[in-house]
Amino acid sequence: MKKIIPAVLALVAVTALSGCKRTGKNQLADSNGKKLKIGIIQLVEHPALDKSYQGFVDGLKEAGYVDGKNITIDYQNAQGEQVNCVTIAEKLINDRDDLIFAIATPAAQAVANLTKDIPILVSAVTDPESAKLVEKNTAPGGNVTGTSDLTPCEAQIDLLRKIVPNARRVGLLFCSSEQNSYFQIALAKAACDKLGLSYVEATVSNSNEIQQVVTSLCGKVDAIYAPTDNMIAAGMATVAQVANENKIPTIVGEGGMVLSGGLATYGINYYELGKLTAEMAVQILKGEKKPAEMPVQYLKKFDLNVNEETAKALGITIPENL
Image: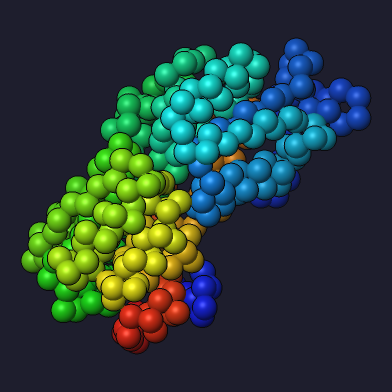
């Protein structure tokens, strides 16, 4: 599917609530008459994670679980701080939530490290297994499962080659403390090797380093690749400003980063990822399944996103065959 972005363009049925009983005013309750509570912990605000959250809430609503009517949703944002993740995780656990939804790996790890009893669903986690959230992606074995935002890294590097055919050296930009990114960067390196591209790692440890690190790549690389890294995604406007001013194309991990000035990506739809996670939540809340027996789920559809303003600023014409 081709979705060209002019300026900055981006790209079931109600189920019966068996296994639960209702109390006054359409209040959904478990078998003990307790109103169900769902805690949500999100690492940071940026388009991809925000869409995952909204998809989850909308997916629950479509299944009959409506915040403020028959369930209570407690949404907490850690603002990108790991210490906040731990504090929020402790709160949700102490509140004895019936289910916790954790968005992004650091948020998921914070809550998973503190409880082995409350069902936890994760989203926007590239590889739950390597993040030590589950025993195996195919057989989680504990109280954690969810959805992966694994993107087609090889296809993204191939996209870089097609859009920037003269590129020889690629800057791999990511946060040094994010497990998701190391997993994706390994895939990107393999793809570069396959295409005969050389590469240089450019890591940041905090958002204040982004401008300096991207600037350091100027004159050294022909293009920049940034995976679905939360710190880079949140600071993508800064990445794009420096890269675009210096005529360096940026191929990125997801559509929200394209909206913020990146050139292009093959990415997943994070809203649909959130809805997929909600489907899993409904099965758990209805007592039909337990996280231990629910394999991590993946989206199989990827969209091409291109920022036409960025392409114009870089003097790049997108090949028609894309």
